[in-house]
Image 1: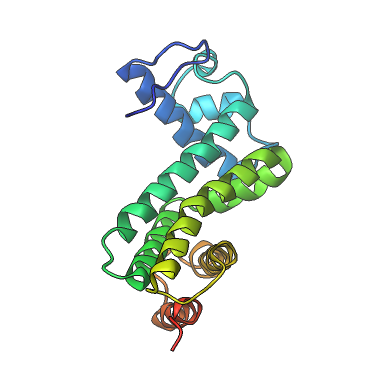
Image 2: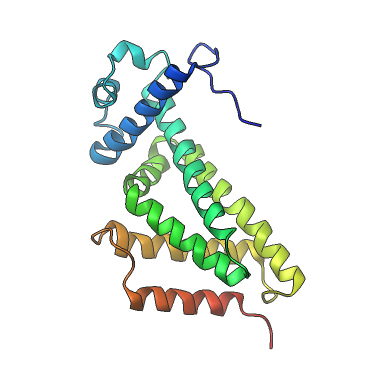
Length: 204
C-alpha cells in the first residue's frame, strides 16, 4: 500500500502537487549539498525548483521541515536501491556485494547524501539517528537470519551490520565522494570483497 503524501495543510497532493514537491526535494538536495544548511534558504530552494517562494509553503512549513523530509527521502531511496540490487543475489555474499555496489552507485549519483547526513548531526540530530536506524534495521534482520540458517558464520548481527555499513560509508567517501565518482578501482573492490568474506565466512 502506497502512503498518501499530504501538503503542509494536511491535504492529499494531486499528481501536479507531487511533481512540484519532488522538484522542491531535488532542489533542496542540491542547495543543502552545495551551500550547507545555514547558508541555504527557502528562497534559494524555491528558485532552484523553479517555483515562487510562496509555493514552497504549500508543501513545507520551514527550512528544517524540508531538510528533515530530504533526509527521509534520501534514506528511502538508497535503501530501495540496495534492497532491489541485493534481492538478485543467490547467496548472502552475492547479496552483500550487490548491495554495496548499489550503495556506491547511488552515492555517485547523489554525492550530497554525505554532506546532508553530516549536517544532520547539528541541524537535526533525530534525523541522523533515523537515517542509521532505518539503514540498519532490515540489514540486521537479514544477517541474523543468514547466520541462524548456517549460510554465514555465527556473528552478532547488530555489530556486523554497523561494521559493514562503516566499511561502505568510508570507502564510498574516499573513492566516490573524494574521487571522480567513477566505479571503485579493482584493487579497492577486491579488498572490500575480501573483508566482507572475512566477516561473513561460515565456521570451518
